[in-house]
Amino acid sequence: MSQVTRKEGILMDKMGVEDVIEMFESVAAIFAEKKEELCEMDAAMGDGDLGLTMNKGYAALPGLLRDNSAEGDIGKMLAKGGMKMSSVVPSTMGTLMSSGIMGAGKALKGKTELEPADLITFYRAFADGLAKRGKTQLGDRTILDALDAGAVKAAEVDPAEGFLAVATAAVEGAKAGVEATKDMIPKYGKAAVFSAKAKGVADQGAVAGCYLDTAILNYFQAKNA
Amino acid sequence: MKKIINAPENYTDDMLRGIYAAHPEVTYAEDDLRCYCIAKPKPNKVAIITGGGTGHLPLFLGYVGEGLIDGCGVGGVFQSPSGEQIYNIAKQVETGAGVLFLYGNYTGDIMNFDMAAEMLDMDDIETRSIVGADDVNSNANPEARRGVAGIYFMYKAAGAKADQDGTLDEVLAAAKKAGDNVRTVGFALTPCVVPEVGKSNFTLGDEEMAFGMGIHGEPGVWNGPIKIADELAEESLDIILKDMPVAEGEEVAVLINGLGATSGEELYILFDSVRRYLDAKGIKVYKAIVGEYATSMEMMGASISICKMDDELKGYVDYPVNTPFICQK
Image 1 (cartoon, rainbow over the protein chains, first blue to last red):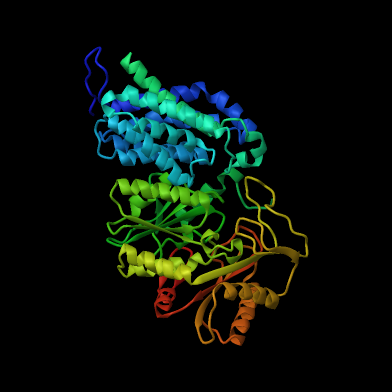
Image 2: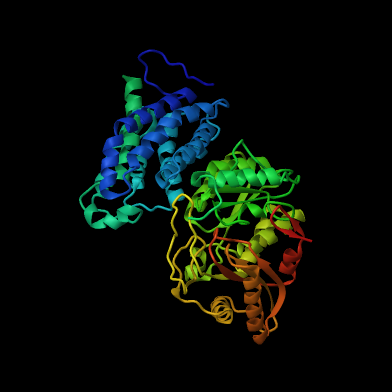
């Protein structure tokens, strides 16, 4: 276990296994809070279970990560925890979220601690893992449109500026990505059936993606406060 | 719904408990009945793993055994197994020579097998994947077709090659060769009932049949009055041979597969119709396989698969196998 020790008042510059788990506790908290809102958005456009899936999956994830943290390899922990999460939420959205986490895990394989550059890698690999599994393209009006935009913006930050700067940029990107979905035509799932209603409304999956990035930012803000 | 069950929600797991109790040569991994594995994996052999929904016995788990494949992810009725289950099976049966995933071309299965492959990659276990996509009527694009009974030949080819100590890429190549040379057309006379739904998955009149439908009741090419065996053989083979030409003098294997509630008598009547059609075209039947190989629970109907033979594929179809469901000396 590589809990990184930090001095009071100094900005966090490395994350250990426990920190990564704590970051996902922040993600669990945001989806517990936004459950109803996401379900309502989804009921208007799709199955109505988006909030339930996100809440159930991310509520389980920190425990699943901890169960797989013994080796101290953050990448393996994310990959295995992500796979376990897919059995908790076996719907398409659950599988896609799990695939994002697994993608990030694959990219971070062997890392016992993360630096700000690794967080940039995390955003990119999460979006790519999800896109690969769902065979989703940018502009298809999905969660990818938020996550990819977040990953792009995060990658523009100089890692020397630290975790908080990277996470802040990711949220800015994801928010712009959500805005952009208002003009996109849905191609997947039940949303495609409601395509006329979609104009001018943000995609609920993209909103969920933006909440994910927001929760990560919340975590770093709390750490650096 | 008329089924011999205890409770609809226990359909899959009650079936599995029965199979494990009857056949000690198979077992399950990670305390999960749905992680179906050969009990004694052969050392240093490529492990072949399949998976798919329940409701198609002997597909998919019935192919697990000697000379065929090593593990099977068992989903609920017509549902995919999870990526985690597939991963756990692979960990149990893999013996150092890599893993081939061989399954039907369905979106949910693809997502879950891809997920398992990624996890195995993290553990430095090599995998390859190939799907069965033999149902000609399901799509004009061969890569977008559903996998149905023709996967039999892919299991036979991959299983024989692996048993003969083929490398992972050789086993994949054998499966691909069989897959490239097999085409299937099916037709249903009655629908089937998913236990937890309790109602038929499509409707047909008493004198009606559905031609070209999928093994989950996906809509076919036409619904209409029932035709005689000779007409069904002719219509099916016209479609197959247009899609995959077979020249006069060439040899094929024929798989006449019952969908669950059609009698053996009828299957042999259909085989004879197929044989006469092929005779008239000068196509020789090298091997005939008649029985139930990919069903849709109690659906009435059949499918016809044609696999073009050469010396290599003949070796695979003749290779002896022994599983709780399929035995060939």
